[in-house]
Image 1 (cartoon, rainbow, N blue to C red):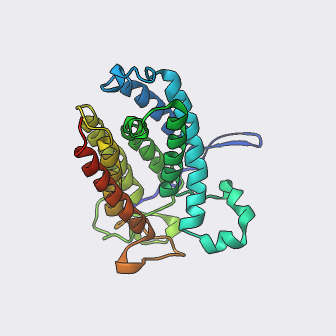
Image 2 (cartoon, helix red, strand yellow):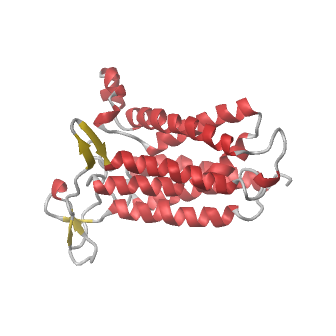
Length: 268
């Protein structure tokens, strides 16, 4: 079995200024999104859209700005509401203490959805046209975030058979070998989901199908990965032996399937 290499979470420090690897992975995620989204503008149907205006690089810049706000605000509020509502209800000022940790993907996703609804409204563009553009650009950013989780030695996996070649001991979690669930999530909801969505979106699709495929795909891959990820100590496993993350994926999967079916029945 492997031993976690104890990577210093600080990538660079100059005096009191410390640059953390986790912050760098966020910057990489946003940069990947920007580059992939500009590439998407060269693909159909976006290359041919002229109403209400052509898609431009400036549109991607604006969407990224609103998206970053949605990720940060939604991710933090989502964590507070989905994972520790009682605590933050009695300590409301600590909601602002994002440097102490605690971000939720599902909350961040809801924040981005609301941000894109607002952006689409201000630009008079169909909301699903916007989400279909950005959906294939998201998974590699999620993969970058999982790299940050691994570097921080956090969100480790459940106990694993010591004979598993890649079983890893995370000293902060005890001496037992565990699944490197951060790597599983990097591969599943990051790399694999990106490849599948990117290829799927390259062919003509009805508006909303790509977005539905993203919701379904992420929800399924995250649901699977959660079987190998240690649940939060303060929550444990819940109804039917599922984690909180898995239960949050259920409505996501259902919404994705329904969106895809609804979009499939629309006229092209």
